[in-house]
Image 1 (tube, helix red, strand yellow):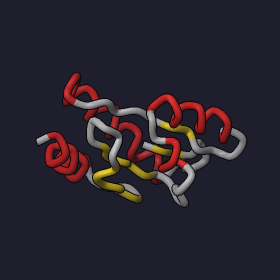
Image 2 (cartoon, rainbow, N blue to C red):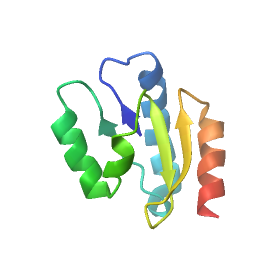
Image 3 (cartoon, one colour):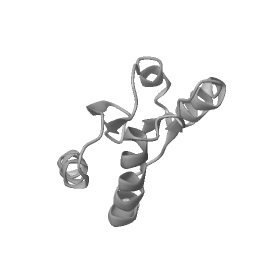
Image 4 (cartoon, rainbow, N blue to C red):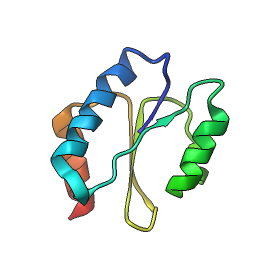
Length: 97
């Protein structure tokens, strides 16, 4: 998930849901956050580099965005804006099947 610290309304809704889903899915998935706030570009790029998704970071135009990848870091789904926990769960389940 990519978020901005100043995006309290939308990002503030999505971040807790992702943490809950990370607990639910456990070892089946890796759910991580990238802070795309102004002034955090260097850290965000480094984190994306570590995750193997740097090319996708540069294409992000708005937050929050949840990107779903397969095990080879191929982007399978991009979910922009806040969604329900059930929506995210269903999207993740489709990707891991």
